[in-house]
Image (tube, rainbow over all chains, first blue to last red; front, side):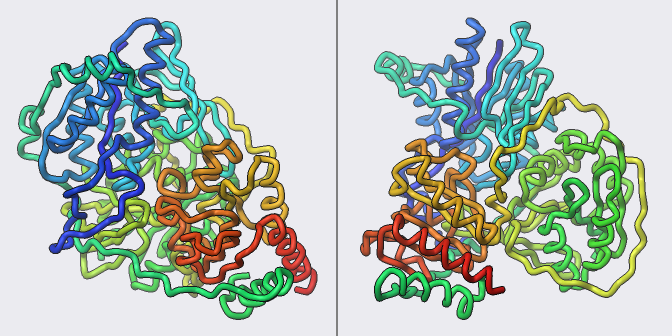
Length: 258
Length: 321
């Protein structure tokens, strides 16, 4: 089975964000980069699916600048068989990223595609849906369990819903499955894996190689802003009972939120 | 402005408030809006509230298939209905369903998308939106190069407002097209919970709760004011709470009227997920906890002492009103 895992390299969650002087992006120099945490679950699910089926290849794919090869090598060190890099230096919008990924999925004959439910940088949570629609595949997001049938024609997915609800969804394959935290515990890279990853040949495409040379982004970003600083609040004083009574009074009379 | 469509969301014949929030803002900006509802059965309450909140026209896409939500079915039916209408803007709430079907719809229209916006502004024929990124550590403006502009709006950030208008309600057969992923069953949570992203009040617990059982004191407190209960990543990773309760950069981004953080130190990735709350309260033993720099009101004390007192005080308040 051809298992594809889509991943994105994002700034570490502890990153303090700074904005460029033209306000068109964030400062990316000196950032610590990680694999998007939700995509780590997708990598693990790809590897687990292969193990459960006892056959198949796991191919990881990313779209991004040269530095993103590191994320691919980390995934190979975790156990992925192949890696594909769609090399772009500028930032593409969700539409164009999905277009590029769709071309790669077609070339690779993907039978199941795993990805994280959203990337924690742009927070669009939209790539999986675009991609599935472009490929005319079904999509299931917020997956917390995914079982591929023995004949590999369908998958049964447990989906996390609102307010703690759970749904069981059955989908034909190929399909795009967007996973969330709770589906598995991603493994660490093994030492032999790290050695293998260093030497792994990574297939590279440009946007033009994928036949998308004339495509442009459909959205234009501008005016990045930091959120306004919150004014320092007040720490309440007195014994605990007094503080609690005062808090409730303030919430009711000053803040008017209860 | 041309043809603006709000995809209104309903569940069991009740409108989602975010749909009315968006509609009210469109009205304030003087934008004539067609509200489209997908569903089956008695939707009179839904269509009525859309009319009273200022829709110029309400269209119901009816089909028995839409007794329950379906990703492909919604995207197909909307595309089928909207294509001949030549839409210039399509907007919906950034709920779990809105976030799910909207990218598929955007792909069908070969256009761009902006998800989870906190404001939008029409200028003549164009709309520009602002959306938080990096879980709210910053935000950006997004403009659309082609029509239709497609975006979703975060719940709880815009105000609802009634409008004295009348509007026609039209029923159309919804065309769900081919559906490849089907919901076989849905089980609601055994405990009745308020959805975090749509809650007015959230009470969250951190690792200081020390166990899953201890979350009961937060649940009890939340029940008195109809609040949702959240958790920090540390509490989720320690197994005290399920992931769907996690607030922060690798969980949910929330903006309630009131956020009460109990035993949460205030890691940057947690603050990112709740900083747009209107009022933030922190209860923490450690006076140096970073959370106190972001809070409106702070109580430096043990949450195990404070929360039960708070529950009692909320109860007392409720009995008076």
